[in-house]
Image (cartoon, rainbow, N blue to C red; front, top):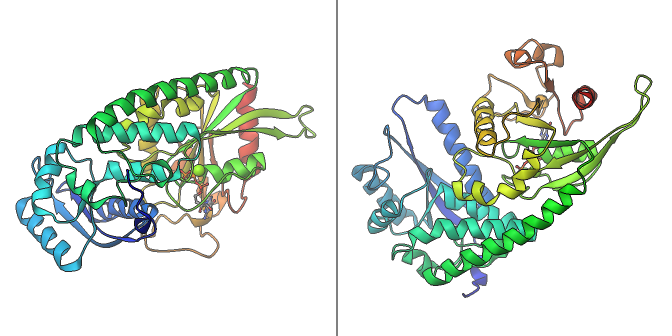
Length: 389
Ligand SMILES: Nc1nc2c(ncn2[C@@H]2O[C@H](COP(=O)(O)OP(=O)(O)OP(=O)(O)O)[C@@H](O)[C@H]2O)c(=O)[nH]1
Ligand SMILES: [Mg+2]
């Protein structure tokens, strides 16, 4: 397949299209599309406009209704839009119908997430997992309708790991899927061996929604330098670091454990990805304790917590001891809208936070700021206490 150099750094002009149930409060619908826009930005697109239609279910034929679709199609023509991004996974027939009306490239939430994963995959394991998920997503959608993508060549929705173009030939994809599965099996066996050799040590896994500060916490606790940035899915592999809390006055022996950081979760994570990232998530499944990191400054952190709990159930890791780490307390402000940015000191101090409903969830709750290094000692002693049991 061709390698289209001119596409690599081009900022694609995008519009976002979402559907929301009639009774959704306006504020939360804005936040859902905020997340889609953050995904689009992370993938390298610039969002020019959002279209939201109030429908209880997406239209099975065209996702949005005919009238709205005409409005969208007209906007795309007038403003020379490259990319129409839909907030849900589109069925093969929805894509086919939309293609008849929409002149630009059509991308759904799943393929956008897959694209970001492809861009961020570094290790052989992550690359293979992403490529497998992409191929499985694409295969049922290839019956003639993704021809517009083939014509467009390259750009968002067409990037495989390492900025390669993804394959669009049906037969080649089928062969590739079997090969990728075989490759993954080999890689998984190696990881199993590696994990076995660490079996004697206690293991703690960081889990949480994407961009909540998991890697920042790992770096802080393990004094390492894993990539942490304000992007979605900066981390795709699992990194494991040895952590040593030195002995103290009250504790004659050091606490030693392995801490792992792994891929973050998100609403409507494509099921192909969960499936192919199962082995990466084994690190979570085999941990003794989970640190569930929450970005308490996010306007929808409660929904994010639910998404994480559901995903933990999906991967069979829901019944582990969990320490809930409310992070980013330096920016916590429950009265803010998502547009407010706080540079100054938080208006909620620790004592106030400890009186909130969050503090009362159970006894394993801690409020920290990983980047500002606030209240990390309490987190450390909570980990120690839980490892002793
Ligand atoms: N204000 C504030 N920002 C923080 C805090 N902790 C982390 N961040 C920032 O949040 C962003 C995401 O941090 P990461 O550590 O990359 O988050 P992650 O959970 O590993 O994200 P993914 O790997 O992308 O899923 C970065 O810009 C961090 O600097 C905090 O306590 N306060
Ligand atoms: Mg990370």
